[in-house]
View (tube, rainbow, N blue to C red):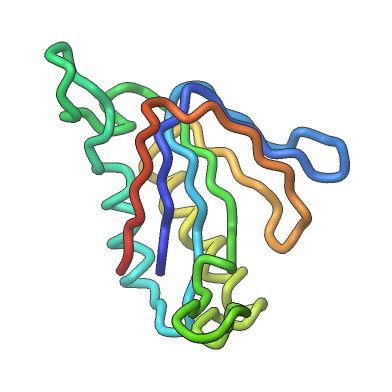
Length: 145
């Protein structure tokens, strides 16, 4: 599992001209589900995302997590994060979970986030999405499990 997290001032996702998810200050997640991912992987990643300290405290140090600042989370499924780019000039998606399995795991991941934090917004699995964001920092990290 790979999750690219970005600290944002705001972010939104549009599908077919309609905004289907939006947050103000918080985290934008791009989530890649791989063949080897399990429910345990999802639980560990959800906990890590919510506890990851990327927001500044009163002294300007990254000591606060999204829950501590009352921020939002916008989660976007992105199978391209599971790409193998080691060889050639075209990515291979052999490590990505098959679509039906990936959607089930992604939905579980989102539900784990929702059980522990609010607000959680999402895109639409496998849709052509237009994601807009104002990256704060920029602060971007790749989390892997």
